[in-house]
Amino acid sequence: MDISTTSNEYSEQNFTNLINAGIVNVNKAEVVKKCDTMANAKQFLDSTFPLAKGSHKDVRSYVVYYQQLLMFFADGTHTGLRDSGQFVALNGHKSEPEAILLKNNGTHIELSFDRCGATGIKDHAHIEDIRLEGHEYWISLLNIEQKRGIHSSQGTQMFTAKDGEDYPLKG
Image 1 (cartoon, rainbow, N blue to C red):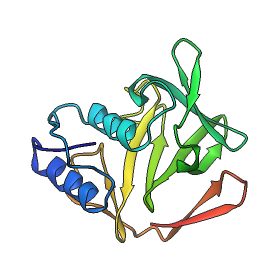
Image 2 (image 1 turned 90 degrees about the vertical axis):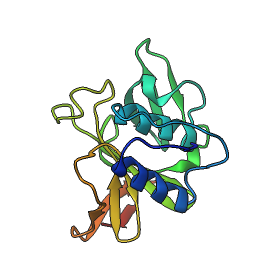
Image 3 (image 1 turned 180 degrees about the horizontal axis):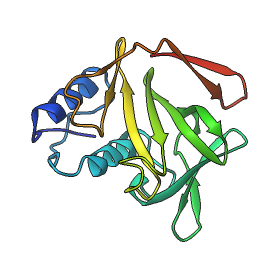
Image 4 (image 1 turned 60 degrees about the vertical axis):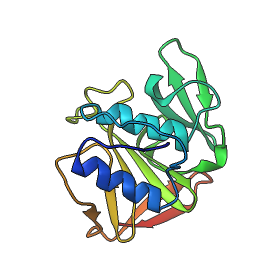
């Protein structure tokens, strides 16, 4: 994903952190629109965790099948990540995960799901939040009312790795 201008202080801070973490590429010009944080977050997912076919914006559900992350579309077709190794862990049941953990260049991204949440109820895939792992904090790409990163006061969070083993993650 490439950023040249941002429309508010929060977006600028978050995307600057993404650039500094080596997750966002700044070689091309691309504008982040102020009012559609979900679209911007899914655009980030498309550029950092591209699908084998299609776009995250069209995904209706995320499911883990054996050790693969599958994304289903409205017409019933499905796809996986272009780089299946980017999927590392999940929380919850494989058919309806509470969270998916992706990894790119050593940095984790967590997609959390909640059908009844303030954000999840409005999204076709029920994504409640997309958080980027920082140094001792997490940055929400969707909850713009939080101007700073979410500090890791929770200790270690346990995920289930795609091979079934425990996958501990700080914060």
